[in-house]
Image (cartoon, rainbow, N blue to C red; front, side, top):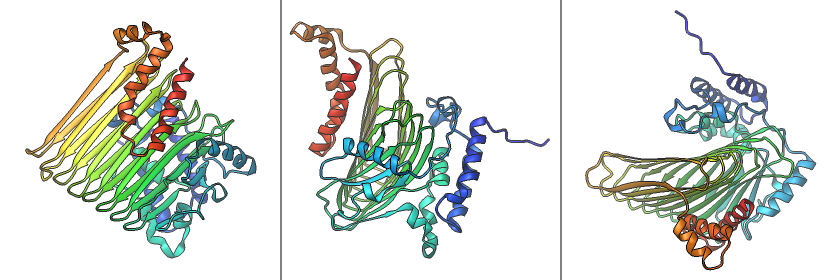
Length: 440
């Protein structure tokens, strides 16, 4: 009996997009070969759906409905609209790297104002360098996730950032992803290498210019952190109201290093951040925190896999979700402790606050422990605002909306307070306050 793999309409659309875009994607030779292998890996798996355990709560065959063609390179009109969006979201004193519709735009970026010890190249230029054909490894990852494979196949551009050993950056590096093209998709892939003993802050923003509608984003960032290094990363997914945003972070952390990662989803129709963190050196400290602020029919998903591969490492995960109307929040967190990873200290806590009877939250914390000398734990709670606290605040002159806003701010504050930078913490808090004001 002959078996034929049947493709959904979405799968056929993606095959057509890859066939049409293949000639305009950067890189030839080994790079093109790796792209082909990545797309074939995606085709074997197809779009993630509820039958895939890691995606059981975020069925892209239902939520995406259709796959949009690649966005064209931005023209002068698109760049003008993108400039306005950049001004609204730029972090003060940050070194900006601006990607518009999947393409790095030098005139909107600060490529000439980088601090000593920082190097930045575009992914496109790196892949197109005929003398550097071996850099096809930039499209390789160990994960078998279908959306990461699709990202490798269709990545048009991104940034390759290097931070020298011992460099202590005084200014954050900010990557701003701006969507301007309606009904189009962008595939970007970036790399960050933090040298031994270096200190840096990375900020990522996903935003839509005025007029951008129904766009899709598939982004990946691969981070290598050296021994004794310290990296703080803040990601703000505040995209267009009908955007679909799937972003992936793959982190490899050395010994006696620190990684502080924060992600907040507050804008877009569908958003998922999936982080894969491997602790490869002893004495490392990891802090991952996240917030979902959802209303309407939004769907926000934060999925994390932390791999304790060596002994004597500490990890902490705090996640908060505020869900209103008919929105749906998802948190999946898995901590793996390998047999040799003795003295591991890992904790994970997720809490969801439901503001309506139709709101939904799925929390799935997991532990896979193969060592016997560890201190690990996880917890999950879901509930509504405390009526007694609301009554207490109302009795002291606050309106119902003001009382709710105050309690919500306190609820998400535990996660936001983990951000190391005061300026970035204030920016994240302001974003949360805008969400609360819009809710009124």
